Length: 149
Image 1 (cartoon, rainbow, N blue to C red):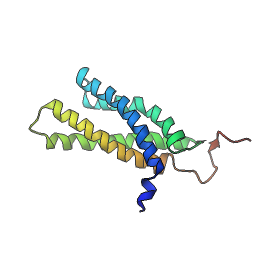
Image 2: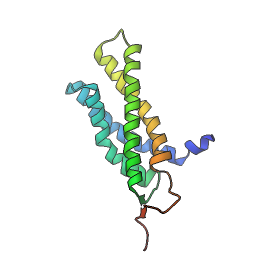
Image 3: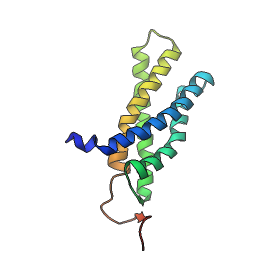
Image 4: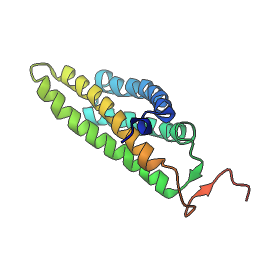
């Protein structure tokens, strides 16, 4: 596969959107985990639930420049978020806890959250780029909001 297919302008726009989401989401997640004492799963899921709405609109219109609407797109976006989240955080927690087994719960939990964020970003980009916001080749169920008809 040609690296330019993945590392193009779209990738860098996605990273900028991700930085905004990361700042907001990290504040939510780490505050809930460390200050409010919420669990690993509740803290991390609150982050992604709350920032996914912003991500959908910024990535749809600005990153991937998709103007069509379809139920397939919304479903693919939601599925991409869910699968990326479950894989990333499901892998990160046992690996971080094993790698840092000599450290305390807060250190291991924070390391797992950080590792999960990194894994999620990579998985989410691939899913959004090649599934959720891929350019439609057929009209089918899509409705172009910019259409003059």
